[in-house]
Length: 490
Image 1 (cartoon, helix red, strand yellow):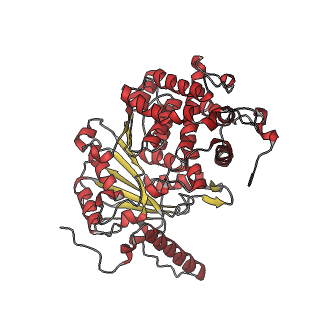
Image 2 (cartoon, one colour; image 1 turned 60 degrees about the horizontal axis):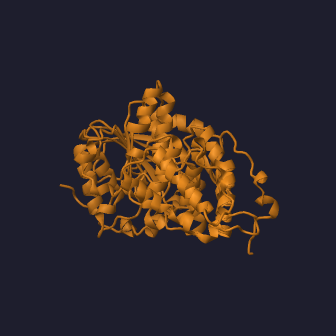
Image 3 (tube, one colour; image 1 turned 120 degrees about the horizontal axis):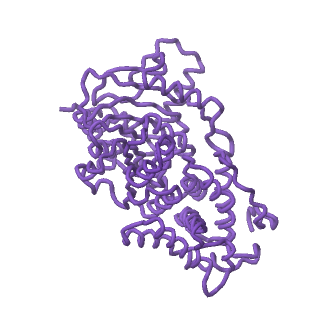
């Protein structure tokens, strides 16, 4: 067996350490790496099935509280297989969580059919002395489930696993423009929005549910009374996800967190009219749209178009926050500039925060966060904030990825103080200026550095530009570097 990382001692359930009260990112990633290797060795699963089996087993484990499931029942019985027992527990979990209507529940259940139908998952494996399903269930019970139950954490554990699985296998996530949002960014969204217990949060490209989980966590922490907490879970969180597997994972995520699943929709955001979506009266919109789907031949796929439709779909005065590639805010194509002009005619741009280029580790995307106020036309004299937050306190650590270097909390506090007008700043960090649709809505566009650069500054700037140009070319946006490509907006 090539690259076999396991030995027989690791197969014993006792070798799985009990989950900590709050798992660190590096521990989560290590768990994901270990489980990925186990799934590869014993599961013989497709890429898309790996995160589904994680969410399905976690739903089954939740049914122990209703006496509908136990790990010890997974004995490798050939008449009622371990997969059948897990599948039935998933079905019970959906029923007990009041997932409705039936067609929605059936659609979710169909995603888990492979659990009971895959022979290699249900047959006792000689190397481990049990079925792979029992082995995976024991692992998830001790590594992840207890952590979720002990903490009302904002961490999207299943989403973390999804992202890691895709990166190991070169999965289809990135080819479809799917870039999962890390926890420190979902939390930053909540802080920028200054969420309160009465907000109604809408994510039209909810993926695995990371923004909704973070919003629910923050709102529940400040909610007064059980009735209000129940309302938050049942009435104040909405999401749309087009992909069936990710919709299933998001639904499972919300069930594991205690609700919110009844307001998730499996569908195409653009198939829903803005007037229909406005009936939800959402006061906060959060979005990480699919990346790099837009082109001259497919202008609807531009990230800026997702932002425009979300703004149109929110309540008047709602806060809208989006994380997108910097090229979206540059918006040099004719169609992107027209959409930017349309946005300013109906909504207000508050500002844009340029993020750490390594925010999406292992993905060639230079991101930024844009914040708007819905249904209040942009006044020409309005000054927006453009912030350079590339130094956010997160660094790349070998074999782990992006982690806090110990300064992230302090740097985020300063960012929020500047954003909210509670701190002084230099132009190198923040520029306040009026905007035009044809502008590049980025700090680098408005900032003039009158300091004489040294050799290190010059090398860093050239490196950043070359990284940006390479990322854009890889995303099919080489037209950004063509001459005479700007247009007049009338």
